[in-house]
Image 1 (cartoon, rainbow, N blue to C red):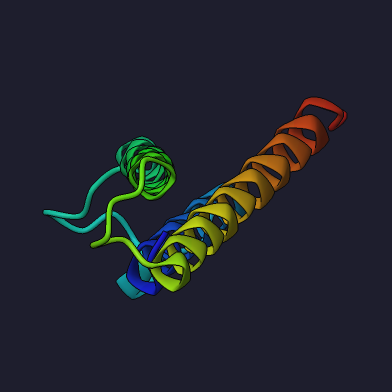
Image 2: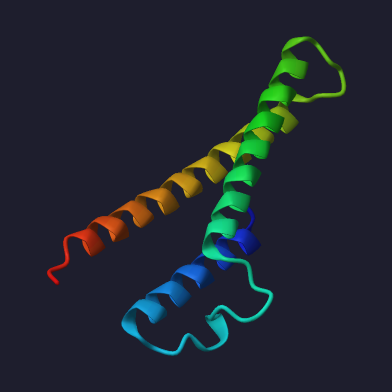
Amino acid sequence: MSDVAIGEVLAQMRAMAAAARGEEAGSAGNAAGEPAFGELMKASIDEVNRAMQDSKHLAERFESGDPEVSLTELMVTAQRANIEFQALTEVRNKLLTAYQEIMNMQV
């Protein structure tokens, strides 16, 4: 997940928090042309999936003896995919925590 994608997700989360408080979202709001939060999450999940698949494919090429794939390239790609997956998992955990807090609110 790139820094831009993480920034977009955080901006959407801030806008949703502002909307929940009943505040004007300002520049972080749902202006025309901005993707919805669900679309950003799907794009992030797709990007992490692509990185994991690329890492797996590169590992298979390295294991089969492809001379164009270096161990350094393989390790960097695998670590990048792992970090992206961990970041996505943390976002999911935060969303679940927020959902549980909302469900436990007294009405």
